[in-house]
Amino acid sequence: MMGDKLRVCVVGAGDMGSRHALCWHSSALAQVVAVADIVEERARALAGYLQIDAWYTDYRLAIEQSEADVVSVCIPTCLHPEVAIYAAQRGKHVLSEKPIALTLAEADAMIEAARQSGVWLAVGFMRRYSPVLAALREQLGSGALGRPVLYTAQDARGLRPKRAMHDAHANGGPVIDMGVHLYDTWAYAFNARPVEVYAQGLAMAQGRPELAHIGEVACDTAAIHVRFASGDLGTFVVTWGMPPDLVAPDVPDRIFGPQGQAEVQFHAGYQELRLQREGEDWKTVATCEENMYQREIDEVARCIVEGQAPPAGGEQGRAALAVALAALESIRTGKAVSPA
Figure 1 (cartoon, rainbow, N blue to C red):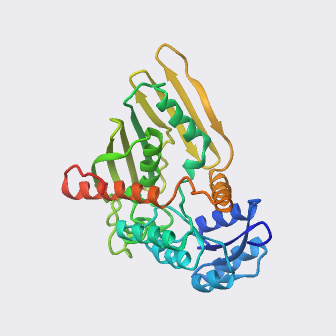
Figure 2: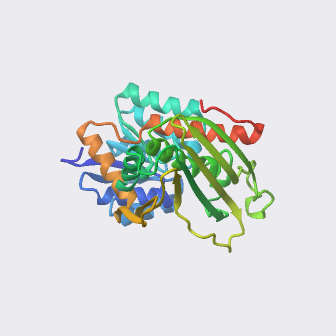
Figure 3: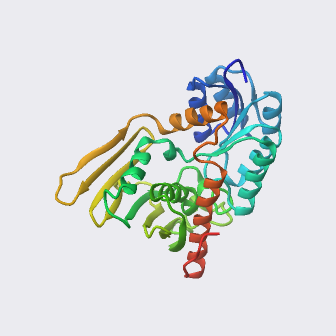
């Protein structure tokens, strides 16, 4: 540590890496000491913005020469295991962006590397750090809507500007990349484990010239249904295959129960939970205007300093990935699948 601050190396200087870097930079418990990116201009620009001199195009040199305490992994999902394991084996705590990996074997290897080295592995489920999700879990646990409930969510967009998000072997497409947020949200809110997944999907953007360079275009459009041991149901409808000039309406997540309904929004800078019980008007139960990424990084930093496990760790990342992979298997086979 640098004085009383954690030394942080950010690997990846793109959109997500820049978010992490700025949040670490703003944290009272941390200081960014190095930035790495394979694109020299990006690494140099982010380091310059943070007013630090240490930028690298080789993450290994960045991790070793910066003497970092923590490594933020903000690169395509397919590369998470390589960097996270390298960092953990050198005694660095790791915050890996979600998804944790593309395979369960890789997730297990990341978890084991952290365990053997005695470091923490956190996964970027920033919703876990919002008081709005905590309030939703409390409301459901107290029976405010009755149980079981149906939780529905939608994400509809055109092609993602980061084309790797459409690559089955890079970020894995929305069933993995975006879906893991929902699968983790459901597991936490329901306080239950997923037991069965059924999904149907397709690659709506297949054949688009913008994706011609991708060897295997990921499934980008799906309806995913997850049943939990509690009896609760989660449904996620997603497409990343619309024309780029179309904007789908931004709709909140909806929760329906035998005694009421709720709406919840999880935007980076604003989260809100509204609830209506039978015979009553809508009421706002919880709001938060703090940036979820900042809350996440502040809490991860606090956990590391105090020697506590982060709320969203490797096991939670693996559990969400297992649901995503079960959904993709269900799409391939047409059958319901139990998450591994």
